[in-house]
Amino acid sequence: MAEVLLSIKGAEVRRGMGIVLSSFDLQVNSGDIVVIHGANGSGKSTVIETAARLLPMEKGQVSHHQHLTLHSDGRRKKPIKPFGLTLQSNGVIGSETIENHLRTVAALAGKEVDLAPLLESYDIQHRTQDIIAHLSGGQQRKVAVLAGLLPAMVCDEPTLVLLDEPDAGLDDAAIKTLTQHIASLASAGHGLLIASHNPSLREIGTKLHNLEAEKTGVVNAAEPWKTRGQPTQTRNILFRTGHRYASSTHAGLARNGLAALMVFGCMLALGDPSILPSGLWLTGGILAPAFASGLAGDPTSHLMQEARANDWWRSQGQRTPSALGLGVLIGGVVTAGACYVCIGEIEIMLVLIGAIMCEGTMGGVRLLHASTQRLARPNAVFIRLLLPAFILPWALIVSWAAGL
Amino acid sequence: MAGRSAEVLLGLGFAGIMTTLFLGFQWAPSVAIDAFESPAAQRIFYWHVPAAWAAFIAFAVLFTGSAMWFFKRSPLGWRLHVAGAEAGLACGLIAVWSGCVWGAAEWGTPWDWTDVRLNTFGLLTLLALFLVLGRQSQPDGVESRDTFSTFGLFGFVLVPFTYIATRIWEIRHPGPVVGAGDDGGSLSGDMAIVLFIGALSFTIFIIGHILISMRITSLEQRLEQAQHHIDGGK
Image 1 (tube, one colour):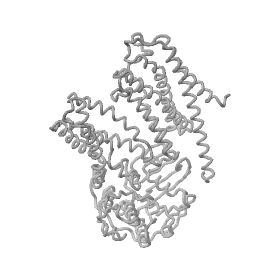
Image 2: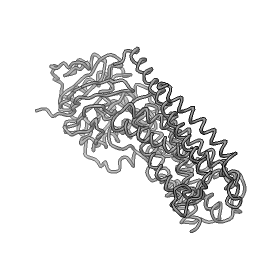
Image 3: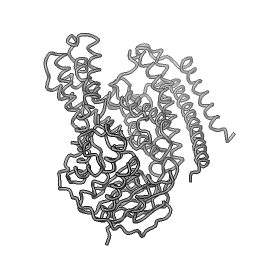
């Protein structure tokens, strides 16, 4: 008997204040290719994003592998098994190489795989080590589509795949490959939910859903998918990915390091710091660059806003990659530098305080930033108005450190 | 008259606030010359404290509205949230601004980043500013209402914290001067009368402000629904 991979029951979903889905039911079983079609604005993307747990529901529930993952009462659980997702936006960070991105996606499914034949099938093997931002729009879409299919391609067990307009921007050859891959993955027992207008994708659909009624009956006779991945470690993947994002773009240095440098530079512009009276002002001057560096926030949070990468990661787990620990490094280094310039020696205790302060402030800013990510325009909201909340703790720590 | 009750309350409150200003400067007794660094500036007290009191009422409305929206999806709750944030911002800014003027005269500095009450109240006002500006920056929707309501709920934690701050850390702000029991109260009868008129006026003003703000939000929602209907939405 076919396994139920996705079940949406009685869903009512709003976009803005308008109800887009009402009393909506959908089921995807292993072996199914469910193609959702309909006019623009009819709610195709809403179905995909609801299934991926990205949208809150007014009513109803979503289950993956018969385990509740999203309920209208606010319960939101990480799916028990990995699933593939391609959003309408690519959900990839431009500074990642194709190989790094796809390896991370496979690792989230607990597998590693030889990517060469897969990349070759989409004619992007020669760009494996290129960063995604350097690819054409169509090539970037190929990477995003492959990332969506990859969990099913590497897993032995039936896997759910959600694809939102996967064919958009692809050339004819790539659409043909995509169609073959979808059909063979379904033959291997995976279940796919696809939002698309493309006739060739509708042709292979075993169920067609126009958001009002479902039509079934098409038999998929494609050869089953054969490639399988090898098990790999997924421990600390968010930590490792966050640091890779930060280091590949030097965003930590550019954002946090520069903030510290600016504050320290402004202080130096006012005069010789070595003549500052010891005590509160000197300690404050030494710790100010680390504090400013923390206030610049987690550099990965800003990178994650590119092409809805943040939403892609949110759908895969409860958290997103972050450069946890980077604040300790940057805070420690800038405080050591400030110590050396101001008092001619490096005070280990102050360096330690600067490192912890920078990490703590960065964590607080990360939390504030994350709390607004569900908004339609997260960049337009004035969340930084709340940053003065960090001044009082900073002042209390400086005053305590000055007394040491 | 019934349809204009919000305007009447707002007008009455405004008149009372102006009366308080007049009484505070012209009628209230002067404080002892050795009790304050700047005894004349102490008269700002009759505006500062009632404004802060009214801001706390507005923040309580904000909290109630946020809870009603977040847990019950109540449209009335959202209107209360919006009105509470706007009224909290108005009164919070009056309290902060008057406090800065008084602080500059009395303490020699308009702001002290180590005074807990000053900072927590300033943060509450910034939270109200964030909610007001944030709402204007986002399309109205469940996601934005949920997010801002969450901030309204968490922000209210600062209210009791601000209230007890001077009992725990008396840095710049004095401890309680009203209702502090036998040993703490320091208000004479005439001072208490002006303060009472001020508190009453600000309370009436804030109620009028909240009612008008709720009416405007309701009209905005009707306009949006009408536009959505014209666009062919469900």
